Structures are given as C-alpha cells and as structure tokens.
Image 1 (cartoon, protein in one colour):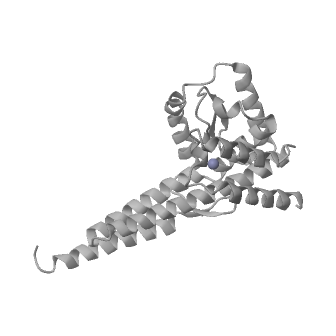
Image 2 (cartoon, rainbow, N blue to C red; image 1 turned 180 degrees about the vertical axis):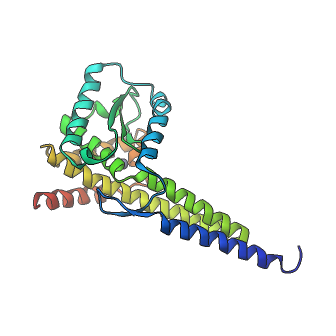
Image 3 (cartoon, helix red, strand yellow; image 1 turned 30 degrees about the horizontal axis):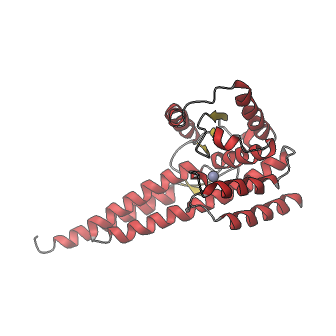
Length: 254
Ligand SMILES: [Zn+2]
C-alpha cells in the first residue's frame, strides 16, 4: 500500500459517514397521528405498495387464508370497527384484515400501509375483545409507520458501516451499535403499538384489560410455540403489562 493512501481511505470513510448523517437529518418528519418525530424515507403510497406487493407471498408462507368465510368476516368486522372509531380512519392507509390458515404458529403482524394478518393458531385462542386488542396493536404498527422506520434505519446503518469499513477496521463496532439501535427501536415499536392498541380498544367500546389477557396468552404460548410477536427482542412480558396498565389509566383519565 502506498504511503498516504490510508489518509484518503479515512477521508472517504468520514465523507460517507457524514453523508449518512446528513441524509438522516433530512429524512426527519413528524408523524401526524402519533406526533413522534421519525426518520422515514418513503411516502405512505410507497408503504401501501410494499404491503400489497408482499401480501401474496406472506399469505402463502402461512398456508394461505383460512377457508371459513364466516371467521374471516368476523376478523374484518372487528378490524374495521377499530379503524372506524379511531384516528386510523383519517390516515391514507388501506386497512385489510386477513385470517391465515396456519394452525401452529401463534402470530399476528402488519405490513406497511395497512395489510394486517393473524394466524388461526392465535385467533382460535382469543375472545372478540382480545382479538380487538391484537388487531388494535397491529393497526398501531401501521400508524406508527414502524416498518418504514426500520427500512430507513437499515439503509442509514448500511451507509455508516460502509463508511467505517472503508475508513478503518471499525466496521464491526459500528455494526454492533447499529444492531443494538435496531433492537432498542424494536422494543419501542411494541410499546407504542400496545399503547395505541389500548386506545383503539377503548374507543370501540372494548374492555382494555383484555389486552393484558392477550399478553398472558402470548406468554403461556411462548415456551412451546413459535411466537414471533413475542421474542426476546421484544419487551419482557411483565414490563409490557405494566406499561399497558399505565396506558389504560392514562386514557381513562382523558
Ligand atoms: Zn407488535
């Protein structure tokens, strides 16, 4: 290696890192529904498009839609009730609720833009109010724009890591900071969605304490089954239940 070339490498590395930070600052915007300032680099139209594009593949992964139309209709009815009675109605998102056939995987999740899914394995354990809790939580992920935020975080840390790797051997260090940041934000996402889920339940006339029962059902299932909504990257159940109780008291007093 030529003398002085390390200086050029560090300069290029720093320039890339600086670029990542400037880009991140430019991407800041306030979420009009949660009032939280976020780093987002896509429009709601793009979020909707990503969700619609991913829907067939995701549905396939969980064994397709549950064949009983009556149960599908119940999921739609509860989901739409939550949307109609909350701020979700005023968002540009296109909400669709899907009951997936998978009888083993206890899961529910949201794609960006409003595509929301629950597996039959989870659905079959819930009362209507608890189903409202789960769907309300997932609507919270959509309104909170959590997927879009993760995507923006991902490209930010990719750029920073690239800069650090060019500049020095600090790639691993920066890489680990990036991952920790993602995990921390992941916990925040769950808590924000729990909080919004509680609010949406109350606005639709459901008992918000049923959300705590949902946590207990997920906790009980956590030992034996595959529960992606409730993995170790998520807040621990006791902490989550405490926060849900605090949300209920907060909204009861409003
Ligand atoms: Zn969640």
